[in-house]
Length: 87
Image 1 (tube, rainbow, N blue to C red):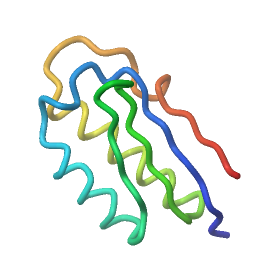
Image 2 (cartoon, rainbow, N blue to C red):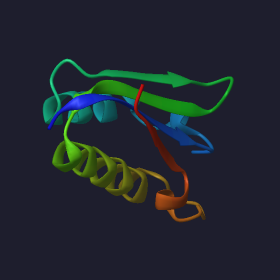
Image 3 (cartoon, rainbow, N blue to C red):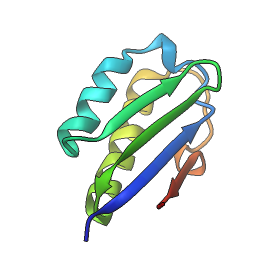
């Protein structure tokens, strides 16, 4: 069942250096109506939307794949950076 959720990805160390808009579009394609914002100051990607467990898993997989594809320096396992909240 779809519920309002917020995912936060912290410590991407330079999301500003890759095409944020491309990642944003990929996430919105998975979950239309989702808000995707990045704070350069806080280095946090925030995804807010109404989605179910399968969609959340797809969004997380999308982020993991995107980071692997575009970030060429050593990063911790992205799964340790993900946090999810439901209001």
